[in-house]
Image: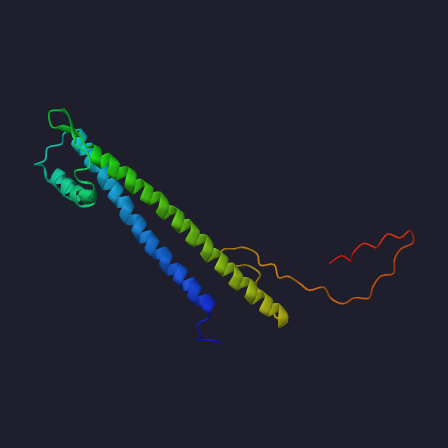
Length: 170
């Protein structure tokens, strides 16, 4: 069977790829959320827009704020300080997206572990059927318990008093 791809391998690979893509999207959203927080605080404290760092921060903020521009009017607090409610709204939306991505990553991780455990169980059962030893643990350390079929034994005659005998110890 070396070199052949099974449907189980394809499922596992697909889940791995989906999980990797989800992590990349999660990282992008997290960085966007941090840029929004930074831009919100710089605007709220009235940072000098001519400073190099502030220019970079506002340019980065403009990219992640593009879909949210103009939803709400900014509120001038005092001097150059501005309470930009559009940034707050964007932070809430990106935060919800982060929670959804975290849930998706958790679901994909559980599915991946389930697929790996099923593969390990199948390998253990195949080894047991072939009377071969098997390590007994999955890649994540979960013990593999191979279901055994009861062997044909001679029945034990009933005990006096009508109670069945206890099952033999395994």
